[in-house]
Length: 510
Figure 1 (cartoon, rainbow, N blue to C red):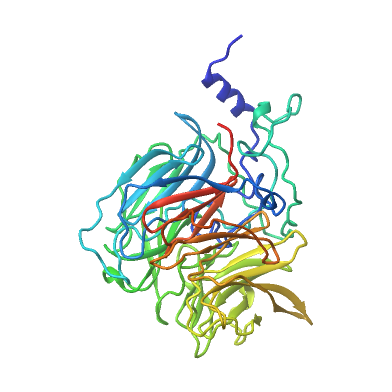
Figure 2 (cartoon, rainbow, N blue to C red):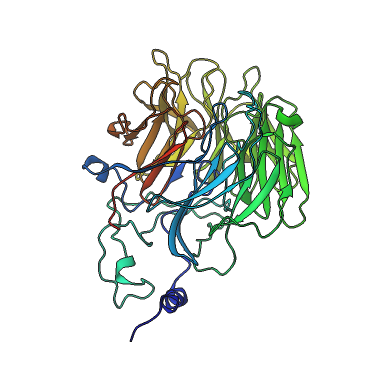
């Protein structure tokens, strides 16, 4: 008996558990998660073992219909690795273009799914206030630490094997082989700490991708076609320089920098149901870094501005506590991570160091730990990355300008020292003209050298010791200044300044 496609989809939906979807979840916002870790916990194709074999390469490139504004071009995509819509199964990436446009690409087939323009301003802007769309687009996420990688999922998982007779596995072509390496240890359970719910691709509720446009309005678009069921909401002053859009707990949050469009430097919250806008204004200086802020597992926002790192209450943005760095200022957005049952915060400072703070005692006069000087004073690190390797060791990675190098990625290990912790120097990468924040995918560190305005960007794959496993050579034909990397579903994405989007991975059969 033949079954129709809708009937098959309904049958799958009736049997699918909530754990469908791959790894620690999709890349939902700039930095991947609410903590801005830049860490994809697991992947069915990318691993230190597979990267030592031939096959990882550029799988497609697409020249987007857009124009760069100053140094802004394409933002790293928000991703959905498994979406069922009226067009069938899709794997989608949602890109923000500086010309005030959101573009959806089928990332399996490198095919335009939809695009939606909002009318870019006619002025060219300035380096500090470029205008257009400045923040990445985002999908709603959770603030709990993402869980450990599981092998369940669809698509690029390698050769299929029989799933007949195994409940909840779906069709045999949908069951991937387990990834080669063991997953990193899961975060320890703590009272009151819930794991992030796994996304359910068969959920009936509409799914959206969100953006803040040059006129300051907040948009909610259907994933499937970009349509907006409701009018956009007034959020920011027009022509504000917005960074770090994220959605969780019924609110959207974004930071504004450089005083563009008359917007105060600070953090803004939009309550999605009531449309109420709340603002926290920085009194210590400009917001540091490229990602605005990071969120702890309880939803608290941590933002660095001038010489102060402030904890803000979710929703209300009321200050809860703060740390002052004295005569030095912060040069990166914070990253939040768990270590020994504590929530820790790391950020870079203008004297070329990293500081680590305890979120539970942020008001202490001294950091929990700080690194040796690893970068020339005043270097703008932008954002940090943090991950945990398969042995359980916690790492922090930072773009830097070490002595004797134009730029590099520096790795620090968090270690126990007496009754506290310390930062132990791990490794320093090769020289880079313009290092951007790396992304870590299943134990592989992808580091992007943005290149110079007269040279091309290069993507590098490194193992946990900093050893180079692969590089893209001359494949990327332009430079990268803003944005950086996004990753998931066996792919790593790089958006170049000339509007060309590159996807790197292991080729798959269609």
